[in-house]
Image 1 (tube, helix red, strand yellow):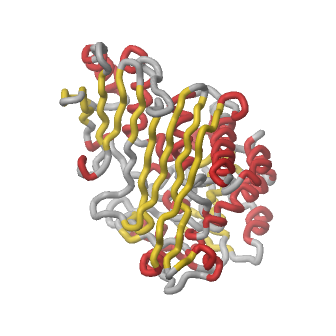
Image 2 (cartoon, one colour):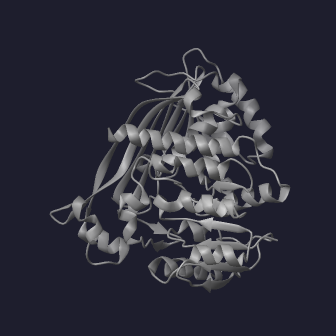
Length: 420
């Protein structure tokens, strides 16, 4: 049985690890945080899990206050796992300190906002105990299915593409004002300070880099100076009018800390980013964008394409699909993949029960049963489950820690390139 400790949970992702009960986690949780909106938001979200009508949780929270909550957490040692989320500028220093004190750490992305934290990154991942980031997209059904396809050379072939049309193109669009767990998300004021939260080169890009690592390397390890070539990186802003800021944060005025980025009562938030790189010789273009308000019925969208010599794997996700992600296979000229696809889907039934496909104009579209789909919010509990698997086995995959180091060094170096 593991006891979870939560330190200054500034982002709602910390509470989402508690969305479902887990028999390996003690019901008594410990929160080390100073009073304020961040702490209250965490408590409110956990309470909503406890009080919901269907499958309520039964978490019991003990709140501990101190002038130095981190010091108190380390001294009291009331549990063995620390969960972190939010305030990314200082996150890696905190992870490294907890790691050196003997705690296992599960921390939300991103772990850094600049390359200055790379020394702490190496310290926190060089040896046990386990420090792991929350990479939720590996639990998304279409990402798992894409991985199966890319690893099937008879279906996909080899990676194809060029500088104009890279082998991998991943995009994601999020919104500053959105619904989470059915309620409007309340963001802390510092979320709009890229010096604390991080900019468009480091935040959602961590997920996109992780997907490229998974697609290209699989379970192999990579090293930055050996396997990565950065081609291009840029960031740009999304305008945040004061009324949007007020609805998002609950605060009527912009704080003084943001004044340098405000003109005519509009904040220029550098939250968007694009990175082009090659990993192990495979070229990829990654684009993360933030809109102002989430369109009704939409949510985050994640269109993508992975180009192969036999077929392309495309995810369509947007208004044209009713905001339901669809995966298509687009055969290349002369590649007859129908028979192999039929065999592959039959082989995959154990892991993807009910998965099917149908012919469409440009190839094939997968039919994914609702039972195989899951929400982004539900993936956090799945990541926690994986994390506990590694702890209970007292070992973890050889690619995990090197993969974390590679991911955040790519992000840090891309940000340096974008700012030149």
